[in-house]
Image (cartoon, rainbow, N blue to C red; front, side):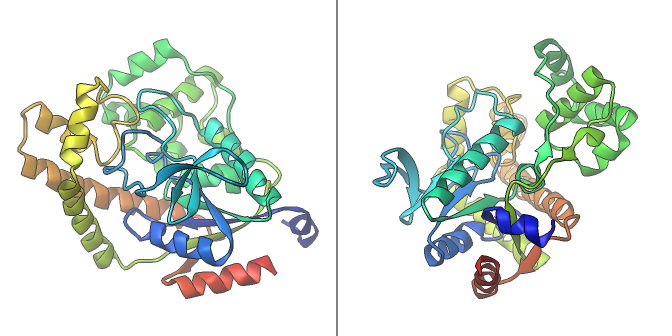
Length: 315
């Protein structure tokens, strides 16, 4: 992006990092310092009824006096695109991108700073790089046949159609695998080759939270135990009773799918919790693999360094 282009674009700050890296407290502090409002970029925190397993902030819906709309508020900071989708509903990357762009521009129009905060790399890239998402509508018949396959079978099929996509996609995320295959099959082209970039929508500053691997693993273990103390098992049980199936995108994520075999009486609760810790560690590694590909991300280990970057960025 040229300096002339950047001068014409509104500014967006992105706070990213692996799960359990401390993005919540980090972003709240920065939002308070820079008159900011937060837009969620976590693909799990969009869902209602899923609070503990997604590590959602313990906020509440309130009326925004400025806009007269109901918003999710935590620590007096509005949070958007959080707690608004039913776990049984579909929600696409294209929908996310459109909502973020509209919300960021609305925040900017009120003289505030939008902070896009989360750990879902593709969600963030869709906005930062203005990904031109393939206009391929969902095909229920194809999806149903693909859903019957295991993740390994889906990965093997995708490897034949699009080897590059296999190296970058979250192979544990069945929904993403199915979507990539859906695009490949219906367009006859690779999924990875269709993720082209458009003209920048914002001038973006991407700040990544850097946490040593051992410390992050300890945080993950501690957080899993705290989730259990807060009632994660009861939260999952309530979702199961409401007939949200394990094959749903909402239920197939880390924090929920690890309890499927427990409820089917195949493993003990202790084994399910250990699975949660293990899978969260693996997810964090995949997140970092994704983020490390982007040389534009500026990595910091404390709020003060992040604040200095933002101050310079806003000049």
